[in-house]
Amino acid sequence: MSRQAVKQAPSALPWAAGASAATLIALSVCAIGLMRSSNLRETTILQAVGGDPDRAVPAMIRNGCGGCHEIPGVPGARGTVGPSLRGVAEREYVGASRTSPDAMMRWISRARDVDPKTAMPNTNLSPQEARDITAYLYART
Image 1: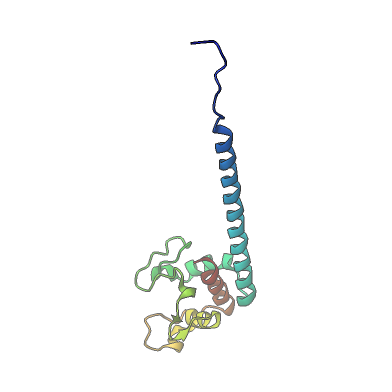
Image 2: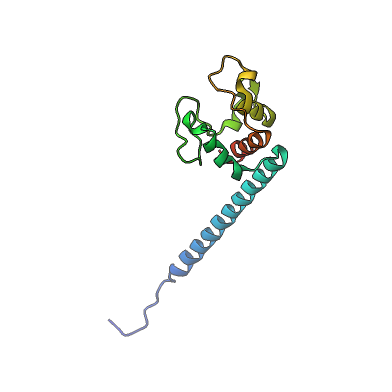
């Protein structure tokens, strides 16, 4: 073998590093977009409903909602007597009414006034608690 310089093929390392960096940047942009979209959605819901989802969790714990319902993000809310509240705002109906923030607030505070035969009790939540819980269910489940 001679001592001539052996021609080497260009390394794939710079290309792979560039592709990895581009992928990482694209994923970061998508994640930021999703967070902004989620924040915008929650802000829109808060403005429409007038509730504060951060106050909802203590209200749901205090009122025992998790004893009957599984509620994402609420510690100990693993009840199976009532339906899971995961995605409840996306359902066609809440109680006997088409799903809307007003119907949700009415249902969670005075369900038996809406449907006397329901197993859900009248919780007699304050209007603000009903708004807070509705905002939580719309924005975070």
